[in-house]
Length: 127
Image 1 (cartoon, helix red, strand yellow):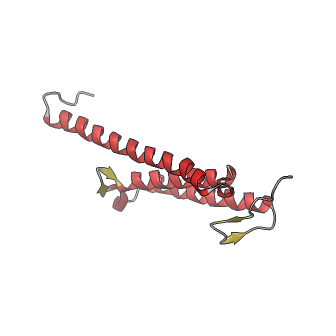
Image 2 (spheres, rainbow, N blue to C red):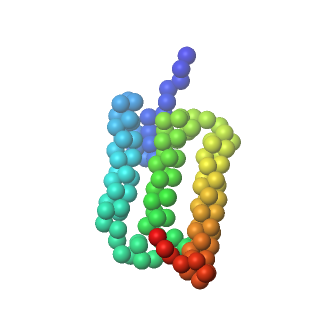
Image 3 (cartoon, rainbow, N blue to C red):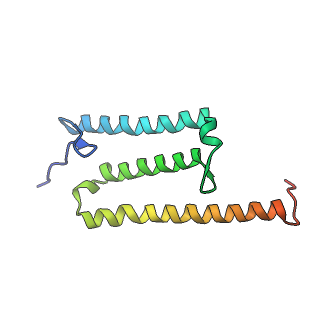
């Protein structure tokens, strides 16, 4: 006998009557986050492209964070992680988050090193 899935999102802030309404609610949320990403990508505000945090433009950090939010929410709702034990949820969610943070750190470190070699080294920009 299958158990009923929770018909709420945002930790019970929005409650739905059936699964169809919940799917539409999740679709609207994910569409809004994607729309924010697209609008920021088109407009590229000077305040976000001119400022750097940890060697990367603030706009890029916003894209990474919003993408992680969407990935987390998709796993939370569509993979039904909210119904699992907390230790399993943490193992599923935190492992990729730490890996993304590590990958971002490595990419930023290596990119900065390569930029400095081309800028100050004997090799010039020829492409």
